Amino acid sequence: MYEEAHKRIFREGSTTYFNSTLLFPEHARKDISLLYSFVRVADDYVDSVPQQVKGFEEFRRRYREALKGVSSGDVVIDGFVDLMERKSIPHEWVEAFLHSMAMDVGSHEYRNAEELDKYLYGSSEVIGLMMAKVMELPEESYRSARMLGKAMQYINFIRDIQEDLALGRSYFPRDELDAHGLKDLSEESARAAPEGFKAFLRAQIERYSQWQAEAEAGFHHIPFRYLVPIKTASNMYSWTAQEIMGDPFIVYSLKVKPSRLRILRHGLTVMLFVFTFGPSSRSLLDEGGLRVR
Image (cartoon, rainbow, N blue to C red; front, side):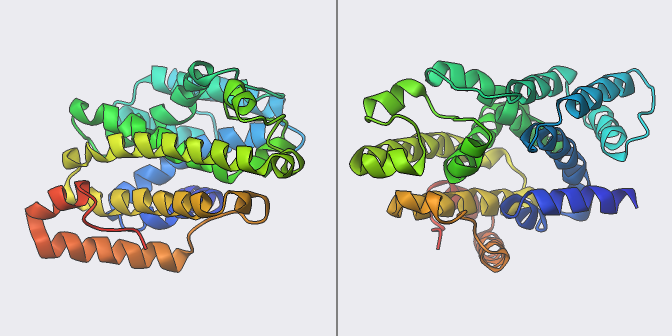
């Protein structure tokens, strides 16, 4: 029953990542569900309309009590704390995540890239670090893990511009909006300065691409049994970026996501690629030998 609860939260909260993780070995899928369920529930408290601030604070309090050995009675919290203990996930990473979630309470704007980076560390980079712990990767992989979490989060920001505006948020540097002549990222403002909007969004995708490239440079640290789902998820986020790059205004008419069929089909392609080329596939994958379609 507990496993089904975690799986349901994961499945309902993420299309691309959930379907990509179906390619993990069963034991890894269970642990990833424990991790994702925890971060999804915390995120849902601050993303709801109206925001459930008291619910978030209570969730954080019960998590901290569970760390001291007091059962929270919540399958999400208790399952995650058990995962932390088994995989030696530092509580500082979790606190950084919860701090970023607290930053989402109310409206918020970031003046520049430096301010945004502080939020991104807790909201996404530590998630990559926790994934590295789940997969028991060496510390040499941690920089790559941080960049992959950051890159994936940034594409979500780009894809979800309208959704975040409805919550009173903008996750993009204010000074860069100004530089492109944009009052804000509402569709009205974007249509009033179409070339500025296109240039702005493409610049954000270029930023994502740099982080993504840095992440993939560390894929040689990932064992083969985990490489297929990670590469599949990475490529599907790249596919989303390419779709938006081709038509930036699509973010106002469609929530760009690869279909379940596309994800699983691509995953099977990656799997066949790995099985066919064996150890040499690692360098081929890192060099972009498998293209996103």
